[in-house]
Image (cartoon, rainbow, N blue to C red; front, side):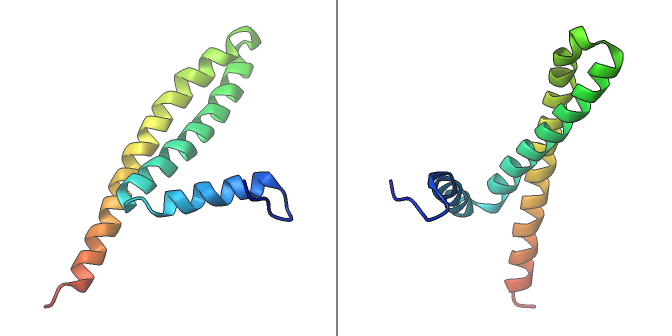
Length: 94
């Protein structure tokens, strides 16, 4: 494994981003939407769970985080598909 001056973690992040950049746009946007939706939903679920009861806060993370991750994936897929459609329409002769 090649390391960069910033360390091996930067190297892993760069290789992951390079790999992600080679995927088709709808899949790439869907994965990013899944991750973003899951993180935001998990944090919101944790806050709501802690406000309700600290004993069951982790269940709220799952109850709010999973649906928001799925919603993020679907919205990302739609967004990526619109990007591909826009590129094709822009390239087509009129």
